[in-house]
Image (cartoon, rainbow, N blue to C red; front, side, top):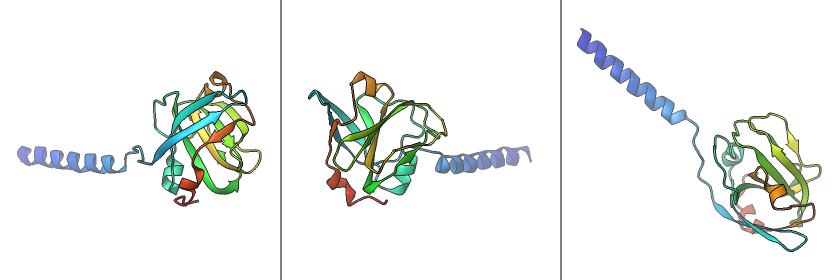
Length: 162
């Protein structure tokens, strides 16, 4: 009888482990591309950004990541300009947020959004996109309202689920 108990415990453990693995949060694979910010004094800052195209990818965003390089980020693109609202639920790294209008210009900056904070951060006007960067990049790179964004928006708008 003890022999069966050991085997039964082992089988139950494996089944529970597989169940937990199946539903554990994990990074979502998505396309990425180069985004360039050109400041008004003509300095160019290059970032590699992930591009969430599906609703699931957009909801997951940068959640559950522990590291984000200073030259990496994520861009959330909308098919038409609209108010974009974000929060830091399950986001474990502080972020800067750069809101971009339909003319590829920065129209709003939010610095140092805090990990796990449920405060909603919204664009004050309809925007085409928002870029999330590692906290401190707005100041370190001298970004300002009116700076230009160079990014192939049209390449990704057709594939959006929003």
